[in-house]
Length: 315
Image (tube, rainbow, N blue to C red; front, side):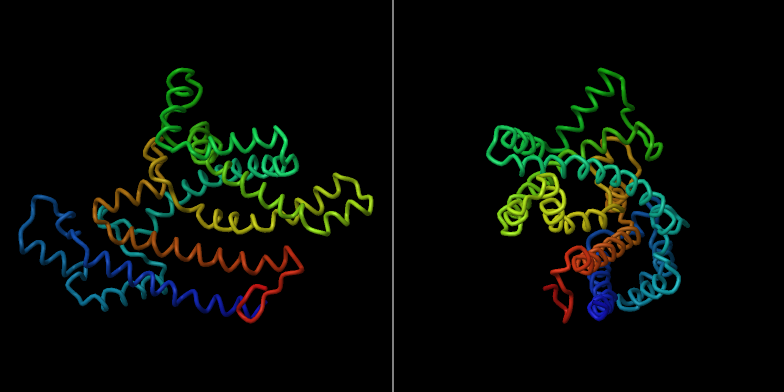
């Protein structure tokens, strides 16, 4: 396992170099000039040329990329924002990632806290009316898009009942987090319910479940020790990538509820041609998902002794 993990970690820098170079090149050769956006209408050729030289945009693409990678590796320096002059990208992103982290943590709690028990219940009640009701409600929730649920919740809880604030952000334990967490979490509940139900049904068809019941074990023991434990193993993949995405934002929800997270910041940076911010988001997101994939593969062998990691494969 140690050799496998070390090999995967050695691949991480190369993967990040590929992703960052492609993103860096696309942002540099794409339409739009960040200098023109920065200077606005009051500009002339001399000022524009001087600013491009100051920012190093006149250098060859490879030279710019090497300089950028050196700053990230040696100083964790993602450069300065072109929109917020003189502000480091790391400073701007850290505040917004903390907001997105708190919001997405609430979403994960709602999604898994409701989805796992309901999915287990539906699987154990297969073929009954309760199973049909649970799956039907899950499908209805999954089919609701954000641009419908967000306005409905705003109209009901903010305007009509005046129970929750319509917008703003005051932290994880504030009422501001309730509606955006519900808007993002409800579709996820449906996905988890269906996934857990299918996994439970697959486990219940295994021979060791019939053997456990034939040995006279209590049904509660069979359900919690044998069915639930083994059914949760495939869910670890979803959970791992969900954790990796905690620092990312959802710009639609953040726009609706006025949340200063990463998603809204990325959209604003895109339209303002703030390339250092967009590149930093791409680098951080890629690193998180690669590490999540590694952690998922390694922990599979810890969760299930039947799985062994070796030779570069999970078997």
